[in-house]
Length: 155
Figure 1 (cartoon, rainbow, N blue to C red):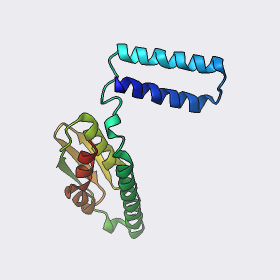
Figure 2: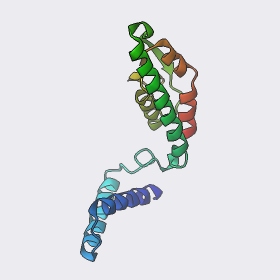
Figure 3: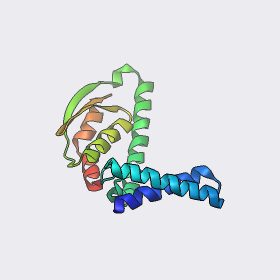
């Protein structure tokens, strides 16, 4: 029930933000369309803890702040390596264990790897991810497991 309420509230916020019209008739049309969409989603059985991950909400700001810092630091590292030339680049691939228990946790981990410049998650399976790194130090940073631990806390 809380997921149904959550998706209803989210759709209402999106509708109000995009509409910009607050007359009675348009608000009634918006409420009717939201009710219809929620009913269809409920009938399709797509409203669950993975489609509406409200359990992640309170931990997301801290994780996003950390991830933004990692993205900035990685951007700086990639730019330095580009300016320094090919001698500073040593690409490689390595498999890492995926410790996340849920599908959404594994996807967040792989996407976080992709968002960090210098690394790409090439393949994701249930228990490991294949990562291509611009340098071996990028892969060593992932080997410390800091990102994996933070995504586990997020779950």
